[in-house]
Amino acid sequence: MSYKNGRDILPPSLLKQLQEYIQGEIVYIPKREQKRAGWGENNGARLLIERRNKEIYRKYMNGSKIIELIQAYHLSEDSIRKIIGKSREKAKATR
Picture 1 (cartoon, rainbow, N blue to C red):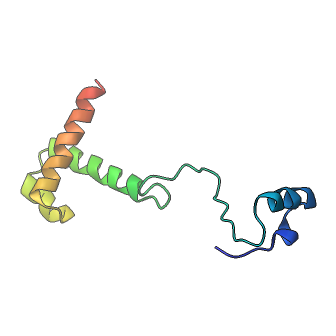
Picture 2: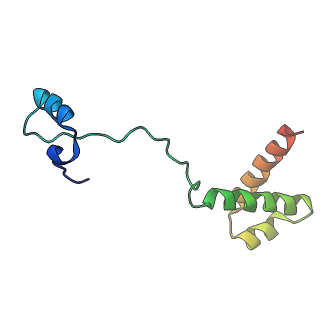
Picture 3: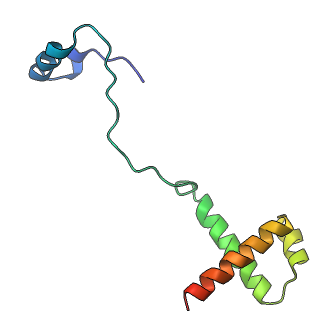
């Protein structure tokens, strides 16, 4: 955040109006409301994890054992089981 002189950036009529409320003080003007991107949406991490999870579920459904998935993806048993459980729920919901 940087300091700007109102004379340099505001139209004279607006500057005059602001001077009626405050003179010689620093005023913070917040940014407009913006919708923040969710985790991993801007850098593609979310998409990569979704693809990985689909692949894990597909391999599990094609006969891969949980221990094989743990070793292949370097995830804990709990993580693999959660991925499989959530993927199974999604698959049931889309039927």
